[in-house]
Image 1 (cartoon, rainbow, N blue to C red):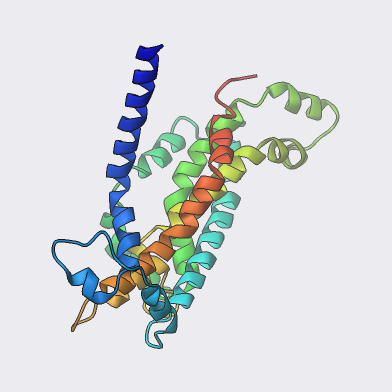
Image 2 (image 1 turned 45 degrees about the horizontal axis):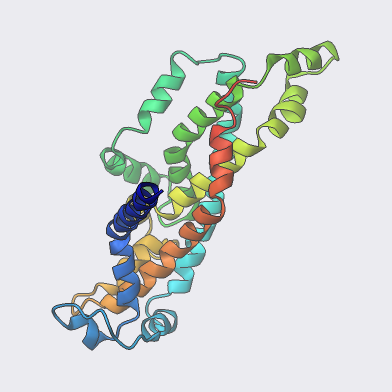
Length: 275
């Protein structure tokens, strides 16, 4: 019993140390957001200090940097990308997973797109959207984030839909059901767990996207990830404001991930065992 207790204590200590090491940047950012400029400038860093919310007041009251607008833009872009990704990837996953359309050729190509660094597409995408007149617009960022997330979503839907028993579709065909009716009344209801997972994952990844938000936005649709960099000016770097903006920027995706963790896992593992 002593050995078991010692092993549990050791496991917990190791786990806590690992969690602290991996989350230290986030912890340091939160602490920095609660410091005044004088405390932030001290070296070595001060860990015991009088916390203040002045940095949070500053980012919401600064007339030159509309931080509230950046948050609103990220919400619109994330929700739009999640909805469009679902609309595109669910029928594609059904066609590949249930009908076998392009499963051997298209699916591997789509899956491999996720491994390609997106920076190599930056210049062609910018030129394409510029010629289309979509720079600094919601459609541009929604479309590009949808393109980024569709490959993973298609793979998830294809894998999940392959595990749905074919007996259900055969019974629907015998009852006179059309392909559209089968898709609407059988596939969609049975796909709700993976649909929820895809929506949540797409929203989180879109919220955290920086590269194309920087390239395709100018002022009107700047997301919060890019808006945080606005506190870096030619004269100074407002570390407290940056830390406060980063803390608020990461909070929605962190809360969504923690609250929907079980839903995500259930959706991703629902098709793991064929039944």
